[in-house]
Amino acid sequence: MIEKLFRSFRSPFSATSREDFTLEEEVALYRHRAEVALEEERYNDALVFLAKILRLNPYDLQARMTVAHTYHYALHEPTKALLTYEKVVAASGYDESNSYSVAAREGIRELEGALETAALPLHDLVDEEESGEDTNDRAKTVAG
Image 1 (cartoon, helix red, strand yellow):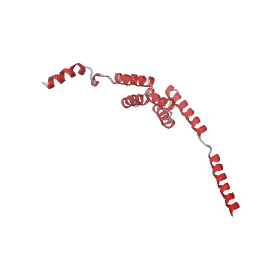
Image 2 (cartoon, helix red, strand yellow):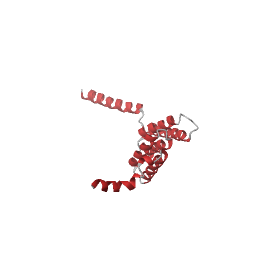
Image 3 (tube, one colour):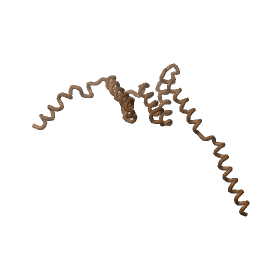
Image 4 (tube, helix red, strand yellow):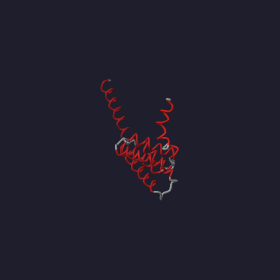
């Protein structure tokens, strides 16, 4: 009796089971969900949907590029963005005429430029350490 009740609940939904979707339809569904999540600024949810697309098709350059942009501009995670941009370039076959490859290379240049300007030059760091040591030596000389 209970089994019949459960079957009656499942029967309307069995016609739309996951097996009835084509790969393209499943990718389109995840892409739509990712777009909605991005519009709602639910970036981590969007990354989950994008990962599902990439699991189905690792060479989906649009999804991979969206992941890179999400890390770069929304989540401000430059290391993850750089790694993902590099994957876009590799997945495009290093084709310099591919628009995703071109955009990924631009993202890489932008991030590398930002990282270079944010980094403290090594000579400044050494100068600060030496000046601290000189001050300590002078203090010892004066005290001694």
